[in-house]
Length: 162
Image (cartoon, rainbow, N blue to C red; front, side):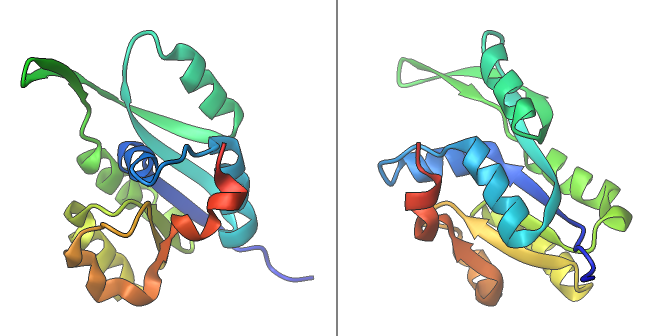
């Protein structure tokens, strides 16, 4: 009997969502969770997301799809006369990746954000990185150093699109 890997995913939901939308499609989060389980043996998937009152149905659906949602309070910022909701989850993602460090064999980081450079570098150095899934071709050039770990979600669009 083969030993089942125990890998965890840490997902920057904003980076993922905006990344695929910029390429003209929407992600089916349920299919993505199953994909993570099948392809990368993800036992736990932490989804870092800004909390917006009124999005309860979305949060319930994500939890039903087996995501562990980590909520970040959001700020409403006025830019060019438009109201934007901002919920930067970078610190939470890094913190939870390190809190859970002893509990997983390998981590999958889902984001193309260069702010995760030091985390990814640390995981590589300690042989704890499985993959970095980037949402589109325009990801931080800081991450190019880890190109052998990077996989672009666009390759799986047919399987993962709504």
